[in-house]
Length: 596
Image (cartoon, rainbow, N blue to C red; front, side):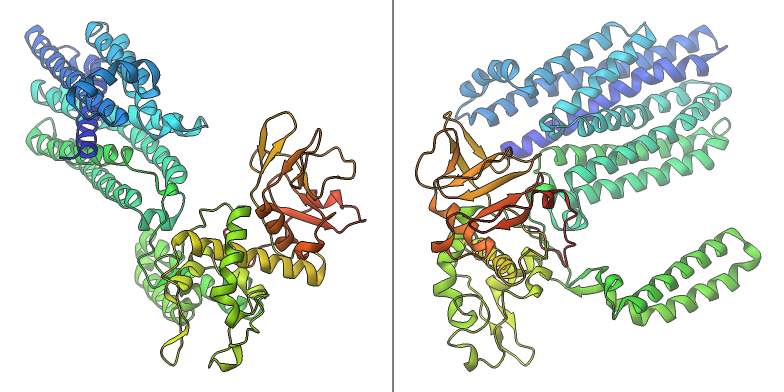
């Protein structure tokens, strides 16, 4: 077993034990008092003894697995080469890491839960707090917002009360006479839907923050494990509904089916906990490039198309009518068959138009450029464009290269508006595998001999060059264009990047001097300038000139206005002034899915 696999298993078993502690303590504080009621003293003693035994055993497993997990995690963090190195790293991890602090707090809270067992509510509070420590033992601990940690706290503590409470409920029903079992079941069921709603809501928040999109859900390892967890959650909901609306009604007279269902639900819940533990050991989907598994992808672009809009809206209307008819069929028995027939008719008429909402896709369609549109990437792409692309597309990318007239299909004009309709991942696929000719063969060859970084650099240059061509032709950027990423050295000895300047408008000025302005300014020059921030890398000069549509040798004195979100908003040629109000105007609407 690899170190990562050992960590995932230990995390999963440890989390399951902690949830069991939470469930036992909450059951002891909330369910047991009402369920015990007027029962014999011998029954009460037996019930409490079994509940205490469960909590003590769960706490023991949690403490043992915490120690083992800490040792293995420390070995992984320290890249330990021996057992001695691993154990020597444990004190450092405990003292200097968020993980170590959270683990210390959890162990202390588990011990306090055991010590406070006879004080029901205090023990439950300590147990819930031990579960809440999970927020700092995984991805949420590295979050720069409170949303993710809060959602994890709610998710884990409610999971403990629900899933961790199943075995304590099992023991209560087994040990108590009919009325007590009925009371415990009904109270658990009334709280269960609150737990389920809280878990579902917080799971959605975590999916939004850590997965972020349908491609991330379908096309990444993280998303696929999350889908497995979702499937298990749906099974749990089905079992909970069966217990609540069928089996619990006969728990007083026939508890066996209900007890069997609880054991099955506990097993499925354990699988869901292990899946959650595996997710905590994986990179979130938002940090992965998703591989799209289908040959098509959904799109809503036809709704805004002047030629296809009416047909697309008709299809949407028919689908809505079919859904409404299905609802009517479920709600009104007398109209069921009429509504079913209406739904089928709507679907039949909608079907021929549904292909409007699907377009060709590739495995890399939802890749996003990892470069950040950096100046050095644009410059690297410019150096690669000449030897690899200019023969067909021309030096300026307009499709007029020396080989253009010899090709059966003319090469694309890479400065035309259509370039913005293609997402980064689609361009990356074409650069890797080429573009197929409908009549057979390739209309454009791929460049698998180039590295991934080279292909992303070419994409950056193509976008920068297209933006510059638009600016040169019409005097503004008709589509949102990101400012090239750059780093500047300042006179005070510090450095500033384009990311550091987010949140306020700033400007780029080519040359040693800049017209007076209250906004932050980055000069593009190789010479140090007093009381100024200077980007001296030649790549910054080249990238800014390309994206602004000005020849490199004539770029001196040009100014570029960048808004608070990092978008280019205006260009002023030498002797002209920037339109500062442009930074506050709405951005032009993007035409496609270009990630920049």
